[in-house]
Image (cartoon, rainbow, N blue to C red; front, side, top):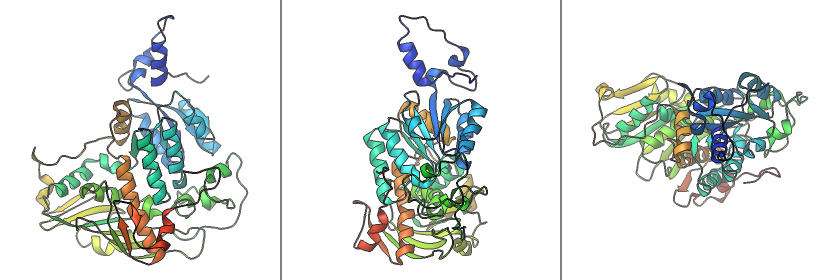
Length: 436
């Protein structure tokens, strides 16, 4: 028999009506060293429990204030795994999670094309949300997600967990406090795309609701390379129907840090120019490599590059990692990635910030930060505005590659200036009945 668990909402509802009936408070409800009392726990529903989604679920299970009570995934095998391991409820359709009054928030780790439709429906259902990066399939989708989050007063955390790492925060603080002098240039890079992918139709495996997996995307024949490859290089990341590729899927991480260190979470560069390559055969059709030069209104330049391009530049001053961010000032530089933090002059790394310096939002656990903000109703460390603006950079850079032209951006009105052909890339058609 599945163990019944008391959620935060159920505890509040039950105790509120406990005047007429006796109520037994169990040890589970009272909490323990590793779990908060039920009245302080956030009940989570997990939407998408593949590789990344399973990793997130495991991470949230370690958070004291969390209780994961349900999963949704069109792949029955994935759902059943979590039912047997933690005794949660399981659904094929994520809307069954959104309909539950006892669930406070959702963790969304679906393919990219589902992020915004789910975010909007979650906001309307009164659910807070942790959304994996990247955000939307288009600039229009990003804008719609932000509107829904703010209109319905929801707590939003973006899956850019590097903000909750000390090295990334410190690198941004060194830049923001001008310990490298006046900021002049930023380098941001990440892994590029991949070629290939079979286009041969295959039978849909038993237990996989392929039509629901497609959702708002166009109907195409199923094959394993499209969405179920075991090596993680599934087409959900590299097919333009579902994503714009690693220019956003991995680019979100270094761009997010670039934005944070440049104090531009509420805006984006105004000029984008450069080059990139697209595949011409196979199933995978998103941008492979890119070299984009961006200019901010404040005059700071940014080179946003795939790793293949960045290697020729980054290796001149530091060890290479698959993605990272460098801030270059007129008196030095600081560079950070998941392997470490580097600087010139090196003594910057031993510096202690003064009380009068800018001290950025501090979080030591991205998942706990989200759930504590669900309780406090404050913005987490990676709010919707930061997610939208960094995603804009990925989209506008991709548009440069696809059009072969310089793109000018109006950050106030959030529109491309003077290029009707480029504007068509800022929206996506969604398959009925799905819409923004």
